[in-house]
Amino acid sequence: MEENKKVLVTGIIFILVVALGFAVYFFVIQKKPQPPAEKVTQEPSLPPVQKEDKKLPKKEEPVETLDVPLSESDELVRQKAQKISSHTLFERWLGTSRLVRKFTAAVDNIAHGLSPREQIDFFKPEEGFQVVEREGRVSIDPASYRRYDPVVEVFVSLDTQQAVRLYRRLKPTIQEAYAELGYPNTDFNETLSTAIKELLEVPIIEGNVLLEKKVMSYRLADPDLENMSEAQKHLFRMGPQNIKRIQDKLREIALALGIKDNQLPSESS
Image (cartoon, rainbow, N blue to C red; front, side, top):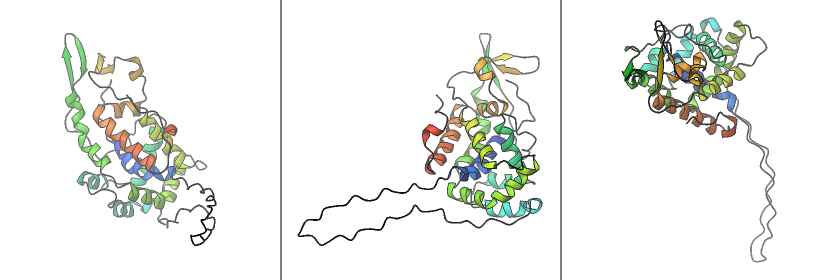
């Protein structure tokens, strides 16, 4: 597995944070109408029961979108996004520029299995990638996983309801950024959904993860792992505990909004 120092693995979580946290609007499903209540035969001694009118399913309350040009959206996004998480590192991420454009392009890359390295320039682990060598076999040093703990803490700190609301309000601006990428007739919700599923398919591997030495780096010895997409490998490098926390949060968000478990990739094992 190649550890490119310029690859900011935490970009994946930013997508899940500002990207998958914001993205959950796609999953909001209107409640199905309830079947009419069965008629109940009243006992003579009881007062008559008034028949309830059949109610139509509730519609989502309209949310006023933020009417802001894409080129002028950074300051407004920073202001509104403060409600999503009080974590100091999240606030630091919001200090970058071109937030909507970077978010949109990074999600598009992940949906296609590509690295979001070009869009993510706000965070980098201080420690480098480490390996352990025992009896001629090389594996990932578990200490390498701890580099990404702060990123995971930001993700699990998200306020889901605030994230949904902000995504809905920013959707026209996000769609404008997506059209700039060459998708004028594609709903960004579809791409976001694909990106989420791409990350949910990353396996959780407990124990040693064996590597094979390349000329200047390493690759995963297991062919199935090595064949993962670039985006999936970035998340895989965060280690089993961090992957589980990220994926659990994603499922929690989806299920809370009415998404059935069988519509998502099966849980990693």
